[in-house]
Image (cartoon, rainbow, N blue to C red):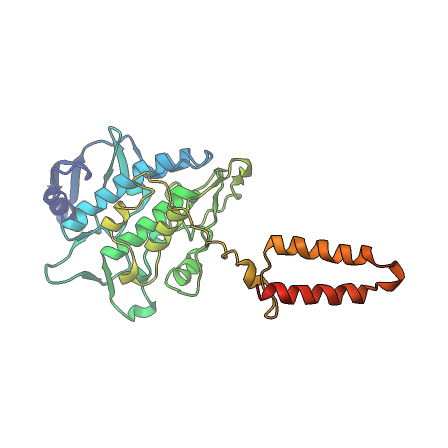
Length: 330
């Protein structure tokens, strides 16, 4: 019933799946009833779309096109003070070429005077679950999730769109539950996106179970470099502290999403070329080229006017020092 209420509240928005009709059927002999929902039909979900493109080179135009639609869909529910809590590729479906958000089964509305929702049970799909949504053992605390929790999940989705898998896919369930909230566990952001041939039994939505199939074959010859600002977007979503994460408006304003060229790194200016006087020792001074020419001619003529045995190197050096001293005072 919660999903029906939320879908009716969001009715008419092009980024949210449309509820056509609903019916509640009572159970027989006091048994559980059934809730039937009739929604508009989607052609394919994002999880399957990503799986089909897993062996193709990185295409930022394609990723940016759908990433923007994902952000717009989540912005709609956040503006309505709704936290989805289970964002993953399988919950975005393509309807007539446009991505729409589905599955509000565990979504909750935020009260007007609060920013978070308290949960009594762990919710969401582990691969995309935020650190604050990881339940501590034996109910040590109630869970507080808010809009930043959805942003974390979005970061995991973008990571999968770029690298072909969510950031914690390679870990077992137990390892994921420890690593996701652990600030000491560093998430890797390689500088290249390497497509791969999916394994036969790979998961289509990066679910909570670790696949037992053989590793996917990497197509290293199709590797593509990743823009620095794209990596920065993922990092801003995947910060452990919820208050430090980017907001949806921030993400929608990213340069790479607007197809702007990244700001080049300006190299430091070269050191200034020193003046010739700065290169001289303290007891030296700049000599005019004309005077230097005269000095050399004088020394040469001095040596030529005397017999070779009468002129030593020391004599010429002494004569040169005398003339330099005189020229410095000019």
